[in-house]
Image 1 (cartoon, rainbow, N blue to C red):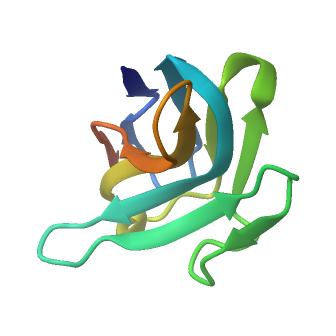
Image 2: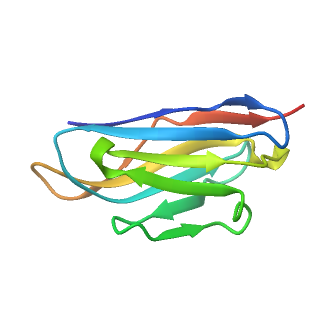
Length: 120
């Protein structure tokens, strides 16, 4: 059994910062790519940032230079540091982690989502 638990969302004023966390737990053998997605009302879910097991990162153009993805392999956790937040960043943010469990094939697991609202 593998579980992802997200935390860190909330309400913030434009220009503010938030840090999202996503912790994986359970019968895990290894974690591969870890990513953050977001879905705004009425829009499709979109990739925000991804970090590979080797630490390489890639970002959506809309958040480049404002958001930073990182991972702590010892804690099985991925983070998203969000700075200079804008109202258009308002969305539900989801983490996705490719996990190889102790038994069975690799699989993409999703977090439950955390709401980020940027508003004055």
